[in-house]
Amino acid sequence: MCYYLLPPEKQEYTRYQVAKQLKKLQTQQTSKSRYSERRQYEEIKVLNSIKDKLRKNKALITKADKGSSIIIVYQNEYEQKVLDFISNNGVEDLNSNITTKFQKRPQKHHK
Image (cartoon, rainbow, N blue to C red; front, side, top):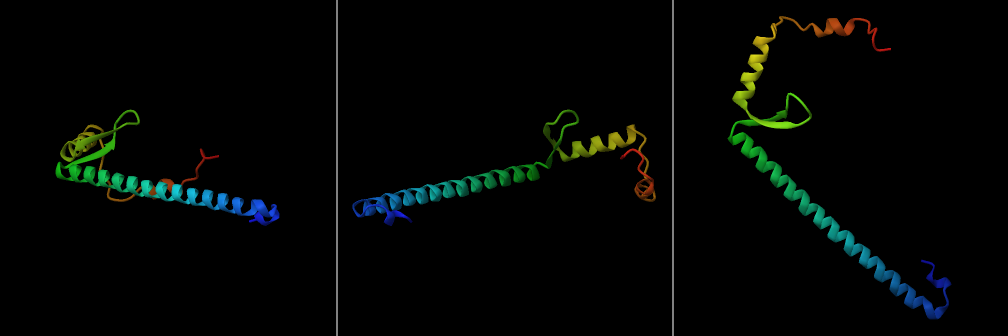
């Protein structure tokens, strides 16, 4: 520090004030860190609780059909909706992966 550039009668007082402020900042940082760790621990606890409840009730979280919201649905209902979609929309099972065929085509629209 440059407190030695001050007049001698103010040096000790200034050194004391600087040390006091540094200690105060250190205490604030420590308490923020403890709060952050505690909050993170609580959030992890809540997430684990949600995962356990979903697992026990055989449910899952998925994006809703419309909008940007999410929903909780039972796995058997979700699987049934997928099967209904497949049968109602003429989806066919292919013996090979045709995506490589489309990926090799020149991409006219990407210019």
